[in-house]
Figure 1 (spheres, one colour):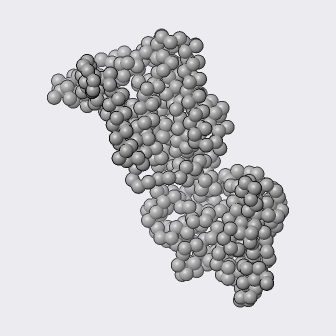
Figure 2 (figure 1 turned 90 degrees about the vertical axis):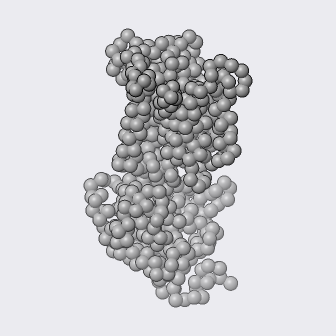
Length: 235
Length: 305
């Protein structure tokens, strides 16, 4: 579904991502973990067209989306839940969701898409006329995911959705990801919570220093030696 | 007492004009982070369109004014603002200075330094007496038009999809684009709405301000400078604070010119010193509240769509 090959992104002369290959199959949940500064967020931003890759290609369902502007990538069917949620705190919850409709390919079915998000996240429905800034961190995260979903993307990219959330709220968010996949959405999940991500995902890529280090399967989540190795390199 | 009321009403009308200009400048700043110094020349172009069609029916004349200002707004967006979208705010500001002087020079070469009389609706310049207070019709009209424009703008920004997109792009352009908000559509909409407001000001200004009865190359230039200062004093990164800043400057200028005697000696005994008095107030305000008079808390963020 989503195919990244030979991706390189530079900030000035410093390469943030080098020769990265990764692929996400239709209906898969694929994890992308690694320490801070590994290039995970940069990879997502390159897919969205928010930063320009210096080499490599990004293909969605077989056709290249490299070099397209973010608003075109969204219309091609990729949505991002950005790091830190980036909720519009001065707007109402409902206005935030309506912003997500901007990326829809067709205006038909907007009401149904909103309905589905309200079903998935009842707390978003309850607070729809309040200012988004009044929501808790977990509620804002659900709003951010809902805002990406109302565009009915084929591929959902999430950038550290569990950041700063209480453990029970993390359960809610990770549970929602399974429900979203069940609706047929392909998911690429960038996370810091390595163990939970590896356990949830069909496959998890480990990045460090802008490069792919290894690929882990769900079985590796219990293997703490391999997890440590993934983060700190083999000794 | 009646003089005071008259001065106050005139000041509020002037404040309304400045508030309109402030919102026109603020709309474009919101989505482009561009301080459009050439805004006054859009108004100038509209006023020339009116002056050159004095002999035509008034509605046709006004329609031409709108057409000229909107066409020029779009041309500026396509030829100047869009290619500079990624440039620094300083570069963009300097570019609008250049455009401003270019348009003034074109006007000078084409129409000469001597101003042309703008006649829109002469009847509106006649006074009406309410309880012993003489107020010109145009003064009342100006305030009504400003209120209507702000009401319409409120509806546009809060009830329509493009308005929602404009607000989101003003707050956080990068995130708005990541959600699928089209930068070009939002910017074009803001430029056009800003142009409509410039055209409205072009129609009102020659009737409302007696010194602006003539349109010359420097038409609306002084107003633009004062409004830009007002916008900064109010707080440029929010539409409401920018508008209130413009309004406050207009009222302040109106009151000062009403109460400063028309002849006398330094200081503040002559309306010749009006600008000095206004800018001294500005300096004091900026010293006390550098973040803007009407800004709650501090806003930083200099990102663009």
